Amino acid sequence: MKLLSLSVLLTVLFLTGCSSFKVLDPKGTVADLQLNLFQLSTVIMLLVFFVVFSIFVYFTWKYRETPERRQIIPPYVKGNKKLEVTWTVIPILLLVILAIPTIKGTFSLEELKANGEDPLVIQVTGHQYWWEVHYPEQGITLTNEAYIPVNRPVAFQLTSADVIHSFWMPRLGGKKDLIPGKTNTLTLNASKQGEYKGQCAELCGASHSYMRFQVHAVGDREFTKWIEKETNGEAADQLTPTAKEGKKLFISNCLTCHAISPAERSKGPNLSGISDKERIGNVLLNSDENMERWIRDPSSIKPDVNMPPFPDLTEEDLNALSTYLSQLEE
Ligand SMILES: [Cu+2]
Image (cartoon, rainbow, N blue to C red; front, side, top):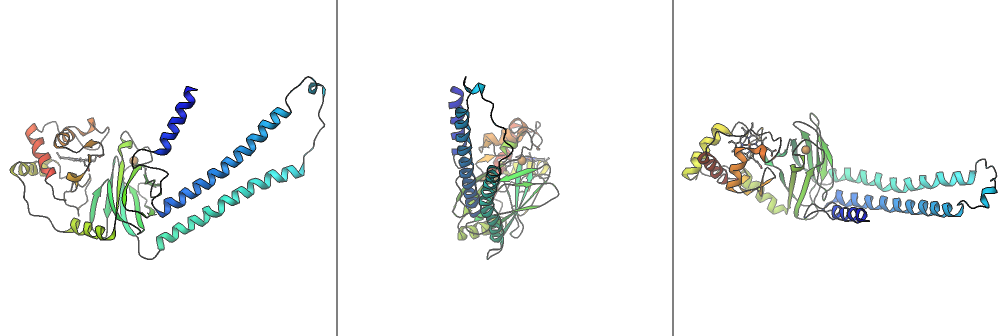
């Protein structure tokens, strides 16, 4: 009994989801359609379950063994056409009922791609354990997050730099694999402004569960403003003296892997927006102290991470680096 209530509780927790990572709460055309299909197939499944199970219970009881029945030898039955046709036709009908909306829906999703204006193209590259998000037309590169305009189809072009990952944004619809050497396109839209969470859905290594993703769906005007902000040339260097020290250290230790201007792509995450991020590496809350911990030994925080530790940097160096990162222009 305890086990039963525990599993019921877990199921409820799972279906409700945590905070904004909701699975059955669609906010886009694709996700809406997927929920409808999911509901239809669940209803059909429950119907079949109840009918079959009722018949099963009824016959088990009706033909149970009794002392009188033990004497009777039942007649030999050699097939029953009517019954056999019935239990062949019913499943065929159920499958047809499922197939019609599924096929129609699949084609209507293709239309979403062609609908009116061109989709916004965003190239997403999966890495162990972070997402590179590149806007080829606008020349913007982000890490673990994307800005999209509402009500416009967005073509996520998915590929991987190492192993297979899977892009999953439950409230917008999905998921699709990121495969090295191949590009898969997933076209989605958001019908409402808001923050939507995503998660890598293909076990890809020790820090797979930290491979999270955030979509900011904003209005058209806000989106245009955001692009302008990201693409407007560099602001004047107004660094404090400590940050200037940090910049030197950054150039000699970090620049091989990290770009710092939004237009550039690099081997590791682009750090241009790092000061605004809620978490470092999707794990640690973003603060100066945590930034120093991260730089000294990232794999003690995010297992198997592809950034080396920097045991030789002094407290002062770490402080200068984190100060520099917090003053980076977006
Ligand atoms: Cu992954």
